[in-house]
Image (cartoon, rainbow, N blue to C red; front, top):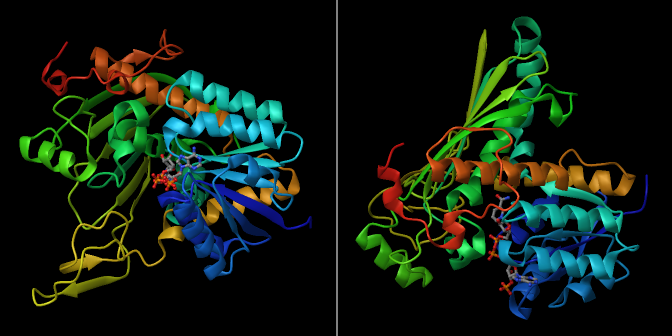
Length: 414
Ligand SMILES: NC(=O)c1ccc[n+]([C@@H]2O[C@H](COP(=O)([O-])OP(=O)(O)OC[C@H]3O[C@@H](n4cnc5c(N)ncnc54)[C@H](OP(=O)(O)O)[C@@H]3O)[C@@H](O)[C@H]2O)c1
């Protein structure tokens, strides 16, 4: 057993705090610092870590100061997509030869060159790098995959179809809605999860990522809700963004066909949306094989509450992420940090960083996911099913990210 790992969180916002809360289930590591753009959010997040007893965290507004703190061995990058690379450059400058690990939230980059640069910087630092894809650590995904392959696939052959979806009513901060800053719309924001979770279910345990080779990608995107007049007004009012001028997609679906090592096709279907109105965030995963199937749905859990019309409480997010209602029948995800995979993910990355082991998801995997996302946008823009690896992926910037995309394209065929 090595020494405890001192962790610094860069970005004390929404997901930074999810990581901090998940630390109640993480051993052998302490959160010793939080850095944010403003003292307010750094201070609040550091105070949360101290209140929970998951580390004697200090707060600062300088990435360099956090990285140079002698107690910090590894950092978790949890900043918005448009500052991801500049933060990594500062981590590289201050942390080369000092840090042992760098973990980064999804997506690794907004384009293939950005994601590749993240990987190059991590390699140049000679650190272990981890791509934070929490859905691969969700208990139904981990346990479902283990049982399905051990019993179903062993007896009847490998699974051939995996479906995954992430849906909610729209993000919490304006930068997510801005194509240029975020890198796209819901496809870039959430399909990174669904593509990777579905692919992971079909990858035989113990085999490398390369055992499934992408062959074709086909994708559609659309704006179904947020470019309707009343929702354009609402976005202007609540987020200060104008979807009459620069809209992003709020719906995406993609089919990726992979070839197995013995030349068979297997398929992933991913769907994401910012236009789902339900109790809150919904994550689903389904897998089918020749004599078996599985399905998981984060809203089908064991706690349902009911509030009559006499109970009109304040709006909040205390029952479920991206909560939509406080009355009627409401499902509650009792331990969101564990159910969404953050706890298992952080336990894994801490164990790897402490013991000098390459994590199961690295920046190389993050780069592969970014390539798939760009191919999805390319397919949607061209209205074509693309063969892997499509030409021009390296220079490709989605029209949504260039803020030139037109929602009416969804009505055109080829
Ligand atoms: N795994 C998941 O399911 C999941 C869920 C949500 C988000 N994410 C990803 O996590 C990242 C952060 O998202 P979020 O929802 O946490 O965003 P957020 O709520 O906007 O929080 C971002 C935080 O980063 C800080 N920040 C901004 N620029 C910075 C800089 N240059 N240096 C240091 N800190 C800086 C902000 O500080 P201030 O508060 O002081 O402005 C804020 O605290 C995104 O890449 C997103 O895609 C992943």
